[in-house]
Image (cartoon, rainbow, N blue to C red; front, side):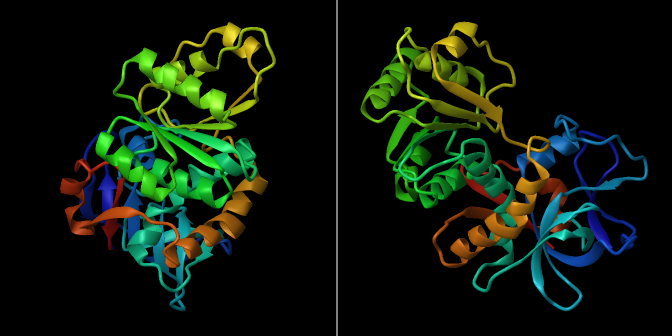
Length: 323
C-alpha cells in the first residue's frame, strides 16, 4: 500500500510503499482510509518533541494517529489508529470507532476530532462547564480555539472572551460566538486593564489556555487577589504554543480561588475517553452535518505529503490529507 512514512525523527515524511497492516486479534479491524488531518500533535510526534513520541524504527513508521475510512461493509467511520493512518489501509480499534452521519464530508470529519478532544474534554471534564458561565479562551484564533468557541456556546456559555494576535482572525471570531476580543498585540498593561474590566463586569468562570507562555503569566497576574474573597476560576492548560515554561508566583495560588489543571493525552480517565467516542464525537459530527459547527480546511493529496508537511496553513485552518 502507499503511505506517508518517516525513517528518522525530524525528517519530512515520504510517499512510499509500505506493508499493509494485518489484523492481530478480535479487537482490531482494517479500514480503507479516505481522509486524515495533520495536527500539531502529529507534527510533535514526528519531530520527537511531543511527550507521546515513540522511539525510531529503522524500517520506517507510517504517520498519522486517526482518520476517516470505510469498513469492509462500506460503513463510513472515524477511528483512532493502531497503525499509522496516513496510508491507504490502517488498523484501528473496534472500541474507538464512530459511524459518521450523512451530510458531513470525509475532509471536514477528519479535521474535527483532535480539536473536539482539545476543547470539549477540557470544558466538560476539567472545567465542568455549566450553562450561563463566562469562558475565556486564550489563543482562540487557531483551529482548536475556534472549535472551543462553538462548543462552549453549545454547552451553554453565557459570554465568551477570546485572545489572539491575528487582528483579522480575532474579528472573525465574533461570527462564531465570541462576545469580546482581547488583542495580544497590546502592551501588557493594556491587556491586564482590559481583563480587570471584564472581571469586574462579568467574572470569568473558566479559562481554556492554548498558548501558555507569557500570556498565561498575564492571566495569572490579573487574577491575583488582595486578601478578599475571590470568584472561583477553573484554569485549564491545553497547549503551549507560546512556550512550555512560565513563572508562577505562589502568592497568586494563595490569593485566589483557583483550580489549575491540564487536559491532554494521559490526563483523561478511561471513562472520559469512552464518552468521547460514544457521546461527544457523535454529537459534534452531527452538529457539523447540520452546519451548526463550522470549520475551515485545506486539502492535499497523499502523494504530495512531503511538500505539504511544512506548508504554512493560515490561522484557523486545518490541513487534511485526501487518500
